[in-house]
Image (cartoon, rainbow over all chains, first blue to last red; front, side, top):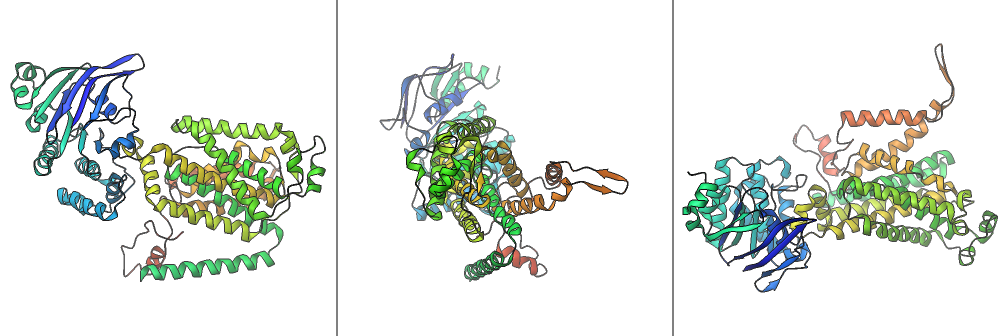
Length: 236
Length: 356
């Protein structure tokens, strides 16, 4: 579904991405792993059009996303759950979700979509009229996820969903992603620090190191590879 | 049922208010009338600043500049040819402007439009900036406008200012404009545009990731705000009947920021209340600036004492009501009725209501 070829990104003089190529097949979960500063978030930001690449191509089902503004890319069916959740703390849960459907105009469909998100996260329905700032971290992550789903994305991108969450909660969030993928065939590009957890739900994985793809392959293979086990899973 | 009741109550309140304006306009002395008119002008200033800062989160300090544009446009459009030639004795006014004289309503609208266009032109490059940088850029713009007013003598009469502007502004015009302004901004906030603006205030990155065009919405807030600020400036010019560039110093913007913060960021009700309180207090405190004695102490009149007191007032409000007088709450009939039925419905809390 998403094809990236030879992507180069500079921040001023800093060469952040050194020719990254990756592909996200439809209906699969692809994990992008790596340490801090490896270029994971830069990759997502480039796909969203927030950062402009100096070289390379990004195609969504054959259509180039290069040069599009972020809000146009959202209209093409790419949704991003930004790092650190970033819900609108002064707006209510419902208003947050309604903003997720900002690019859509059919009210009836939006209402149905809200009901679907509530079915997925019943906790959100209980807190519908509460302002999002009063939710716990885990609930905010659910809200951020629900908000992204409101646009019925073809490709859902999630930046570190387990950031700042208790291990139990982050497991819960990842399990929800897996459910979503299995039930409705949602294509997901997942960024994680927690390699073990990410590899357990992903189909494919790419491992980034200082702006280059170091390893790639099926998640199961990578979880077994010695190098990954040593560096990222902490197994000696 | 409830909606209908609220609508009837709103209409009744409007009629009552209209009646009050009629009574006031015909019986009150000019001094009180001027204060009431200024209340309306400052209400517009505060409400529009709230749209830009309170709802959209853009810290813009360009209000004095927008108001100046509106005031000068309206003044030049409503003054008679004779008044203009009397005013421009140092340098004659440029020819097409010299003989233009149009009625007040189109002059007000043109003042608003002009300010809105200028506001958008400034916003275009300035909105790339965020936070403090935007504040500095818009502050700079406001000063540029003032410098232009001083130096474009054939159009603005420079530092001499304009005198003898017809005093068209009365309570109907000023409060009419204020009510229209509140109504339009409240309606805007309740649409999906308004929600997108609040989203931008809370988190720009997340808003952009959801497909909200930052530029479009910030621009909209700026253009709508600048329009009404221009109208308010025009009302002010035709109220005090004389303007010069010094009226639109940074101090004016500072007052507006103070009023809005005092009323509560994100509450139009708060802005209105604070604007009225501020204008009335500033007049009521006038005696402080004249000499007076407390017991053995003989205090000479110190000009500017009012502002000292105002600053203390502002500090007090910020200390004890950190989110302003109203926070983000709005007046609503449900809330008012809830006050009377508190015993029966203990949970009726003031939430964002449908009424102004």
